[in-house]
Image 1 (cartoon, rainbow, N blue to C red):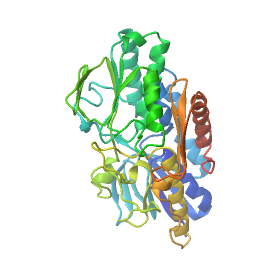
Image 2: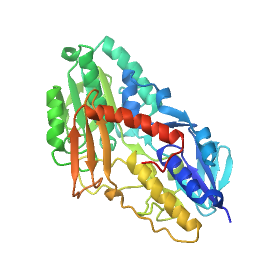
Image 3: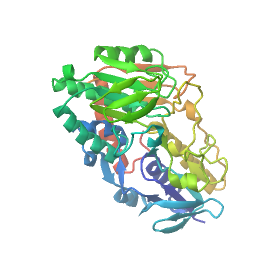
Image 4: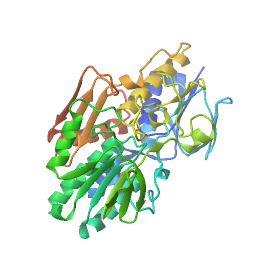
Length: 400
């Protein structure tokens, strides 16, 4: 009997889960991917788009040929309703039934966290392709008429790495253009201390980040929220006001609206899962990446999210895929991976420098962790971008 596996989303988690299941089950499974995007996007390199170091075209490839080669059916459509009882998903191209459903629908920006954010607002962001392109247009205008630069990560944000990377890349570009004297730079973050990263920090991280900032004469305001972003001025939760000529703000992420509206997730569209990445409420529904709810094991003055993109997403997708295969063959879901014990693997670029972040666990407690600074980090990220796009385009999800 053929198992019908439906995957919502075609980026890191969706592509990995779909092709992994098909590779392992072959003709035993009919695998379909439904995605509102028709291309894969390598999000980690969006930090370079505003500075003209990458175009969106450099970071994408069409999904249909990749899935076709893997024997996966691809549908360019959007899910509009999920019925876990009937095991049916309504989409803009018609209904789709399933035996197993993988939700890998990625993130949406939550601009409601502070007035003045979002398209048409008073600050830029870089977390989607269109946002990064708009940020690039604004950057071109800014360097013609420079002034104060503010880079921020709001309360509830989780993608602190992108904020740091943009901050240091912006500082590098400003120095290269000879504008450092005309552009005072400030970093604002809800992190309780510099280098928390949404993963609880690492030994020596706060000291290293402070040294990076000091060397580049960047002021830092940690442990603070953003009240509002008005034209040319950011108001913080402590009442202070920061003038700016350019502001880039990383907001919190929320899950897909269809998840929340279908009652599968919490108010943010995240689905509670166990360590097999199966929904605790709905059997044979699996959630990976941003779609999976992960609770922070700390209390901070301002909410600090946990990053789930990139390597954690890929890890979750592979665990879910192996469990789907086991279930399809009459077994049980025995592959387990506690989210906090996924290894920490990250390259933070700083223009012509950077830091490689490694740890045996993503979240504390850890037995081993290291932050390795140096220009090799910049070259490592460039190489990893090329490698990841190469392997993903070819559907080689079994590669590390």
